[in-house]
Structures are given as C-alpha cells and as structure tokens.
Length: 425
Ligand code: HEC
Ligand code: HEC
Ligand code: HEC
Ligand code: HEC
Image (cartoon, rainbow, N blue to C red; front, top):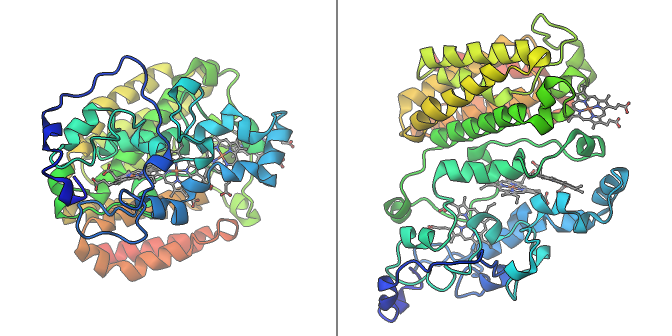
C-alpha cells in the first residue's frame, strides 16, 4: 500500500494466497514497525494512504506506550504489595492489561519487548504472517486479515478489543481486591476513548473506500452494547457471581456500599426506593435502554423490563433467566441493528434528547452515570456537523460540570442537561 514507489516491484505478492500457519503467530515487536520509512515518521506523509507517523504518535502522545512503565512506579508497587504479589512488572495479572503479554517464549520474535507496553500488536495482532506483505502495493485489507491482522476497523471487534482491558473479560479483570489496593476506576466509551487515545489514523475518502465509513453514534452504541454483553456474561459467570450467593464485589454498583468521595453526593443520592439493597452494576444496559428509546421504543421497553428483573432477582436467585434473555436480545436484535446505523441528524438529535432526559430524571445522578451521559451526547453530536455547531456551547457547559470527579455537583450537571434539552426541543 505504501510507499507508492514500490508498487510495481511487489505486484507478484498479489498472487500469494494467505500464508497458512500451524503454530501460533509470533509477535515481531514494535521495533519492526518504527523505521522512518514505515510508521516512524515524525510528521504525517502525504504520499501514502496511511499517516506513517503512527509510531511517533503512540510513543509521544498515547498512554498505551507508558502502560508497562507505570508498573515500575511506586503506586503500582504498593498495589501489588498490598495484594501480596511480587513485582508488578512481572505479574501476569498486571501484564495482561499493561503490555503485549506473550507468555510463551516461542511466540516472541527477535524484537519483541514486554517493555513496549500496550503496543502495535496488542491491538493489530501478532504480525509474523502479515508484516512483510501488508505494505505491498495492491494487497487488500481482506488479504491482510487472512494473514492474521486483527480487524480493528470493524467496530464490534474493535469494541471487544478495548473492552477486554478497559472493562475486563473472563481472562483479566480489575477485581475488588485490586480496587481496594488502589487501582484507578475503569471507565470506557468507544467513540470518546478513540479520540482521546489520540487517533493515529484519519478517516478520509481513501480510508472509507478501503474500510468503510466511521459513524460516531454507531461507535457509541456498539461500545455500550459490548460493555452490556460483557456485564451480562460476568453476572452469568459461576466463578465471579457464584449464583449471586458469594460474589466478586466489583460486579455490584460501588455505591451500594461506598459513599462517593464527595460528601454532598451521597447525602442526596437516589436510592430508587430501595435503600440498603445491593444493586448490580449494569450501567451500560441502562444507558443503552435510554438511548434506544429514541430509535426503537418497544425494544427499549423490553430491555428496561429485563434490566428491572435482573436488579430485582439477582441477589435472591442469580436472575439467570432474565440474564439469558438479555443476552439473546443484545446479540440477536440490538447488535445487528446498531451495526447498520448510518450518520443521520434526526436519530442523533433524538438520542441526545433521550440522554438529556435520562440525565435530568435522576434527583442526583452519580458521577459515573453523568460522565457516560456526557460522552454519549458528545458522540451523537459528533455524528452531525449541524448539531455539533449548533450545540457546542451547551455541550462545553455540560462537560465543565464533569471536569473534576471529586468536586462533582449533580445539580449543576442537571441544570446544564436541562439547558441542552430545551435547545433540542
Ligand atoms: C483488566 C485490565 C487491567 C488489569 C488486570 C490491571 N490494570 Fe492497571 N489499568 C488498566 C487500565 C485500562 C488503566 C487506565 C484507566 C483509565 O485511565 O481509564 C489502568 C491504570 C493503571 C494505573 C494508573 C496509570 C497512570 O497512568 O496513572 C496503575 C498504576 C495501574 N493500572 C497498575 C496496575 C497494577 C499494579 C496491576 C496488577 C496488580 C494492574 N494495573 C492490573 C487496566 C488493568
Ligand atoms: C490501543 C489499540 C491500538 C494500538 C496500541 C495501536 N493501534 Fe493502530 N489502530 C488502532 C485502531 C482502532 C485503528 C483504526 C481502525 C483501523 O483502521 O483498523 C488503527 C489504525 C491504524 C493504522 C491506519 C490504517 C489505515 O488503514 O488507515 C495504522 C497504519 C496503524 N494503526 C498502525 C499502528 C502502529 C504502527 C502502532 C504501534 C506504534 C499502532 N497502530 C498501535 C488501534 C491501535
Ligand atoms: C492490552 C490492554 C489494552 C487494550 C487492548 C486497550 N487499552 Fe487503552 N489502556 C490500557 C492501559 C493499561 C491504559 C493505561 C496506561 C497508562 O496510564 O499508562 C490505557 C489507557 C488508555 C487511554 C488513556 C486514558 C486516560 O485516562 O488518559 C485511552 C484513551 C485508551 N486507553 C483507549 C483505548 C482504546 C480506544 C482501545 C481500543 C481501540 C484501547 N484503549 C485498547 C490498556 C489497553
Ligand atoms: C458489597 C459491598 C461492596 C461493594 C459492592 C463494593 N465494595 Fe469496595 N469495599 C467494601 C468493603 C467491605 C471494603 C473494606 C472496607 C474497610 O477496609 O474498611 C471495601 C474497600 C474498598 C476500597 C478500599 C478503601 C479504603 O479506604 O481502603 C476501595 C478503593 C473500594 N472498596 C472500591 C470499590 C469499587 C471501585 C467498587 C465498585 C466497582 C466497590 N468497592 C464495590 C465493600 C464493597
């Protein structure tokens, strides 16, 4: 694909079939991507269809390049020692999320280094079979995928990738133990976090031709749906939930037991009529339900009923049936619908409005919920240039109330959400 001048030389590669592999692919290491002719240019290159400064962006601006380094610092050491673990930089528990973790020496290429942290191959997949061919002119994205490149362009696969570390999966998790030892709170939203990373790619005409368009609202929905599926899988997992009798505490809403850091917040918090009950943490399902109301009200109601049943029954009997039905609804109806979502001003507006209403309905929304509402509104707004322009000032005011978690004032948030909501009517 780039640089363009090698086009003719390698045309034969077009004829190569996907290279089959009997053993798992090797990780070649970031050192194999960082040459200035490849992805290590300091500034973007015009002559190629990718920026070629991806390595530089990752190294200088993307926290993923520091993910291993933080394990060497005092905070990480203290966490590990409180948990009775050894050096965090050698602990699989930490390395699974803070590095391209390759336990088997046979799978490590000559330039592989755990110290690279969350590196190119953490996200793009082990490059042994596609390193040589992926930059050859005429080789298609499909051929690269067949050779083991991870499909980060497809939003559902991308969401699963990010969520595996930013929420956790069956193989890695920030447990209550780890939170207790001081691990920062995990929060994730696919569109916003993609922008924050920051992006080392551009969705231009050429990108759209090769990989399809990017719709921020679709990314938001797919991210929430993926988080919701993960939450449901966690609640159904016998190891973590033990049928609701002796559970891992991090699957519950933290505020069931903890007061917020901000005193004023817990005094005014909304108990939903059930003070003292442990409630499960299914925030993504609740977000999804409210946003779906803008697009398919009966589906949103069905999800709302299931969510209420899960909350009602989890402590008593594990809510297995309702969780399984939710899983089917997510996979069978909601995911296929949001995967097809196109950029459309009307639905973006309707979603913004529903999320504002959700934000203003609670007497005193929790910071974590308010933050998710803010990111959802932002993604919906980013989908339409007209909305983005018209409501920018109000969105800025909403985000100003979210700037400091410790000093969060729910009333100021509700006021800003009401102003935005009024603008949308
Ligand atoms: C399920 C994945 C996961 C596991 C397991 C995990 N972490 Fe993290 N960790 C993260 C993510 C994601 C962040 C970034 C959170 C954010 O900013 O949104 C993070 C952030 C951190 C930070 C703060 C970094 C900074 O820039 O200030 C430290 C320190 C840390 N982790 C240490 C550890 C240690 C030590 C372990 C093992 C005992 C561990 N983590 C296990 C995913 C994980
Ligand atoms: C945290 C995950 C993550 C890491 C780490 C990461 N990438 Fe990416 N990368 C993505 C995503 C997501 C995209 C956008 C989707 C796509 O086009 O596949 C992307 C896109 C790209 C593209 C643009 C592809 C195109 O078709 O325009 C290139 C090139 C790239 N990455 C190279 C790198 C290199 C080199 C590194 C390491 C220095 C790296 N990436 C590290 C997630 C990551
Ligand atoms: C292998 C695990 C892993 C994967 C996969 C991963 N991340 Fe991360 N991410 C981390 C860790 C660990 C940190 C914290 C690094 C630090 O603070 O040094 C982090 C930090 C971030 C941050 C900075 C957060 C902050 O507080 O400033 C953003 C943004 C982010 N990730 C976005 C993404 C996106 C988007 C994806 C998917 C395309 C993704 N990540 C995939 C582990 C991962
Ligand atoms: C079922 C109740 C319960 C739930 C739910 C719960 N915790 Fe805890 N948490 C506790 C208890 C009990 C302690 C120990 C308190 C002590 O040592 O005094 C604790 C301790 C902690 C600590 C250490 C506090 C300190 O002062 O040392 C942190 C941090 C923490 N929890 C975070 C969380 C987070 C984040 C969540 C949600 C993901 C959560 N907890 C959910 C009961 C809970």
